[in-house]
Amino acid sequence: MDKAYVQIYTGNGKGKTTAALGISLRSVCAGRRVFFGQFIKGMDYSELKAPDFLPGFELKQFGRDCFIRNNPTKEDIAMAKNGFEEIKSKIMSEEYDLVVMDELNIAIFFELIEVEEVLELIDKKPEKVELIITGRYAPKELIEAADLVTEMKEIKHYYTAGVPARIGIEY
Amino acid sequence: MDKAYVQIYTGNGKGKTTAALGISLRSVCAGRRVFFGQFIKGMDYSELKAPDFLPGFELKQFGRDCFIRNNPTKEDIAMAKNGFEEIKSKIMSEEYDLVVMDELNIAIFFELIEVEEVLELIDKKPEKVELIITGRYAPKELIEAADLVTEMKEIKHYYTAGVPARIGIEY
Image (cartoon, rainbow over the protein chains, first blue to last red):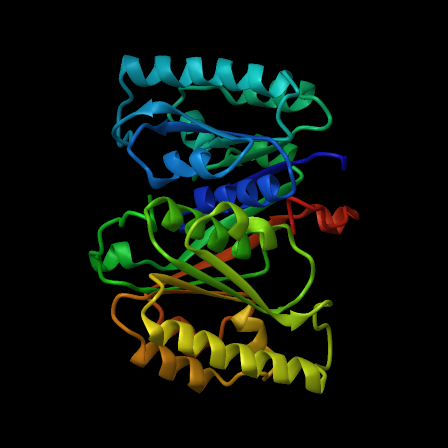
């Protein structure tokens, strides 16, 4: 098994969660086990069906059925905090080769999770577990701690032309 | 069926092919049919196994077993040109909801395929077929013709720290 790293996908462009899904697919093809945790999100996304197709791929949502736009509710906070505890135990269990913390940057941005907790987790995670963190607004400290950081930069987006999110493409 | 668009993932950062794989996974989860063509590439990537897991997902490579670094050979040119003809017929057949032209930008950059041919294809493609084009160096004309463009910008990459590409992650 190769050494594992910490990857971050951030920025305002499309492709962050999708890139994490793509690496998950590749990992499954290579016979690896993947845990994909979605913070903030609890909507009915197409990817919820992915475990039906992909052996060794687990996905769990730690958010409500709407994205947080302004002030998080008590429920938002509790779901994110519980989700983080759960994902920590998944990482420490060494049962997974890849663990995705989708939208974790957003959870940090809304102060549902402290960046120090995440840094501590990166520090003490088992060597062999690859971590992927996604979401806009990756904090400086995480960027410093990560091995690979890609910024998805919006050059042109059809949302701004009034195209709604579409099943099978955006969710 | 929603109206379909043209998406481009370009830039020097990690996540372009992977984002296209992620959207393919989502599309399959939503019951759609996907054709994923890889220009330039003919290496033994993990994603070659994805069709074993995903119903309605087809993948084909139109490249040799090494990436073009400098001058393309006659074989490179022939494979790219034949690949483009094949993918055109896939698009026009209307049998697929999503067609990915992975690394097409690189094929254009190396002058294996002309940008005008691609613009013509975008112009005459069936309304319902979504197109995804990936690869560094997306030409200006394609960016103008596309509905969505994300630049994957390298902020930090472990390749530059000497980490080799790893199975299940990069390929």
